[in-house]
Structures are given as structure tokens and as C-alpha cells.
Length: 225
Ligand SMILES: Nc1ncnc2c1ncn2[C@@H]1O[C@H](COP(=O)(O)OP(=O)(O)OP(=O)(O)O)[C@@H](O)[C@H]1O
Ligand SMILES: NC(=O)c1ccc[n+]([C@@H]2O[C@H](CO)[C@@H](O)[C@H]2O)c1
View 1 (cartoon, rainbow, N blue to C red):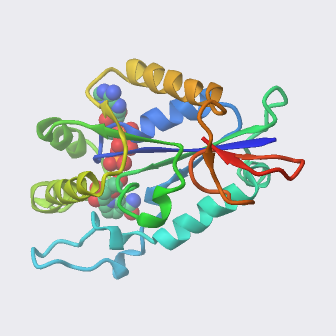
View 2 (cartoon, rainbow, N blue to C red):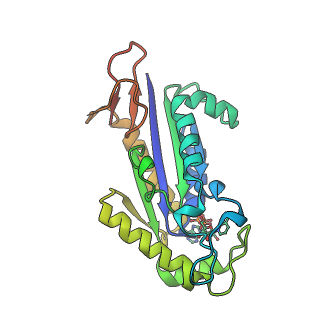
């Protein structure tokens, strides 16, 4: 019986999403990762806003259909996906499969919302965020004024929309030490795996999305948790 868990590691830019995701990937069994940043459209397709900035922090800057397709490929066969991405399956946990989605706009794209078993949201305050961002270099470097003129206002806009839409997220304080964040989230995910059968929700036959899906080899109804 395959158990599939899709975990969102979302939050503001430079909150430590990639750092946390990399630690979790090494600690969790049969764990694959999809980074939202890998789905940015080419630079010439990024709109320029009225503010004069290329709109990198708008959802439209990302090819979310392609990202969804990649998630669906994992859902339809996590074993095949793991093999194709060089993830070794662990013989002691052959039925548990975990997909970590990492990105800054994970909870603003409707079609993905039903897929998460757990949704984390990392935040850091404005000053810390601006400081950390100033130390980074992206494939397209930030022009002067981008953080205050585009990045932070867009973050606030999407966060407000997320809160208004009622998406259930587990808030994480990104100013905590890396180890503390890692242990907190690892423990929480391990509990999720252990309690997978405790409060089953109904999922349609063969449906591979919507929290954790248990696919029974005997063809009885799959259950989601
Ligand atoms: N818990 C932490 N405390 C202090 N600094 C951290 C912590 N986690 C990560 N960092 C640092 O903050 C910066 C951003 O980290 P990281 O790349 O993991 O964030 P991100 O949220 O993935 O950023 P991005 O906006 O590029 O997606 C890096 O310089 C990293 O070393
Ligand atoms: N990865 C990229 O191509 C790219 C280009 C320009 C800007 N960004 C920034 O990445 C952050 C999310 O991780 C966003 O805040 C973008 O501004 C990424």
C-alpha cells in the first residue's frame, strides 16, 4: 500500500526554505524535491510593471502548469520519479513516498492547494528579509530598489490573499536557528507519517491528490489523511 505525502515548504523570499528543504530531504525516506524557482519563465516573457520593474514576484512569472505537471508525474509514480531523479528508494520504507515542494508562491496557485498533506509557511521580518536578500545573487540580479518597490509589496499582497482564502498553513519563524527549524519540522512530518491512518478522509477511487493518499494494492477505496 503506497502512502504519498506532498509537503509544502513555502514562505517569503530568503526565509530559509531551501536550507530547510535540503536538510529534510536527507532525513526523510524516499524523498523527492521540486523547487518552484525552477519554473520561472524566460526573462523575455516577464512583464514590466507600471513601476518599471520586471514582475519576477508575480505568479505569472512562473510556469505553474509545468510545475503542476511535474507534481502529477510524481503522484502517478513516485517510484519512477525517484529513479529518474537519482533518489534511491529505501528498502526499510518501501511504501512511504514524500514530495517536498519548495517555493515563495506555493499557496497562491489553486490547482496545487488540494495536493498538500501539510503546508509550512516561513516568515522573517522586513529588515532581516531585506538584509538576507542583499547578500544573495539570483540568475537575474536585483536592480536597485527592487526589494522595496516590488519584492516586499508583492509578498504582502500574496500573503493577504492567502490569508483571505483560508489556506491552512503551519507558521514557522525563519529567524530561529537552522537546527531548531529542522528538528521542529522533521518531528512534525514524522508524526504525520505515523498518524496517517488516524483520521481518514474520503478520496475518490484512484484519486492521487488531496492530503495523503493510501493506494491499496487490493483495489479497495483509497483513503486520504
Ligand atoms: N535559520 C536561519 N537563520 C539565519 N540565516 C538563515 C537561516 N536559514 C537560511 N539562512 C540564510 O538565509 C539566506 C536564504 O536562505 P535560503 O536560500 O534557504 O532561503 P530561501 O527562502 O530558499 O530563499 P529564496 O528567496 O532564494 O527562495 C541564505 O543566506 C541562508 O544561508
Ligand atoms: N530564479 C530566477 O530565475 C530568478 C530571477 C529573478 C528573480 N528571482 C527571485 O527569486 C525569488 C524567489 O526565490 C523571487 O523573489 C524573485 O525575485 C529569481
